[in-house]
Image (cartoon, rainbow, N blue to C red; front, side):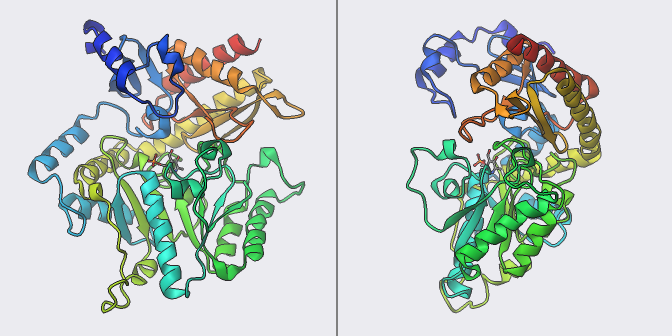
Length: 459
Ligand SMILES: Cc1ncc(COP(=O)(O)O)c(C=O)c1O
């Protein structure tokens, strides 16, 4: 593709960025001598930076978001048409695309029935947390207010979602956190915490132990990622989810699945939990809902939960007294409708499964060649390779060298990710989440770059 950026001088933009932009999640000292990277254009899986350099983006916008790829004219048009006609009205009233998208979404989520719109994954998660607290206050006499979260999971950047954050490096220096959030152990079998045969069941039993320790009448909800993303691409061990479901039913604990990363096709099913036969009470989603073409998040729940917020119309406190101003923007659901159409018409769930096989196969091939790869994990086009200094002891690779692999790939024109300031000592997993339109050639280009980078950095 002929890029505009090749002909335009972007030095003013780079200087304005250097002078005024506070980028997310990065230390800025290096920008005193190195230019910040500015992405100017995108098409398909490829992006061009301000210097005209082309990159294959293997992380869908850095943070597993642009599931249908860049440059989708039909989504841009859907947004244009909608915002020209009606851009916004506060969410106490409805909108045409809001109603239409909710209907389409619920068709994909048997058992669920209500959609609450907001803007970010963090915000959607907070809505669910607030609902759990209100159900506790109204229907359990203030008991069942505790929310369980899992070590290594992430649910957002706000203080309440960080209170449910299982990544100590993300949380460090931002406390104190909100009370009533309790951690359960992670389920990463590669870093076993129990020496047993049936690891999935044992890891889930650990949740029951926490519930019993806290007192089942104090625990309202359990919030989990279906596949842990930034905490190390942790796929659940066999049997884990079945047991989690049993435990939630047994103790009347609402199950909140955070689909902010897995949501809308990333794992080859519409939602990650659908791989495991789980029946959630809350499902939150954001990134892949409109592939980053507009800001939208959804908190989806069941009619049984919804009913608890309308049981007494004479009580002024009996309904969900919450608003998200920009949850009333119509660009989000308009983009989401078109995003969903693309996922369906182009069979991107099917492509995800096919390309997943190739990506996982290639990564296992690299594992045979490079001893530094200790484990390969993934579901759909959501994959990780954990790097270790020693395969036997599983000592994690030095994160500076892991970062050097990411930098080497970028120099080759392939953008990959790594676990970043998540868990101390475990920022050692390479992360891959290409757009769901990836072809075999794209996948091979990604793993070829990693192969070369591992050789350059570790031999
Ligand atoms: C699993 C998960 N939940 C929630 C969030 C927070 O989403 P947002 O950054 O849109 O608030 C993220 C962001 O990376 C995430 O990975």
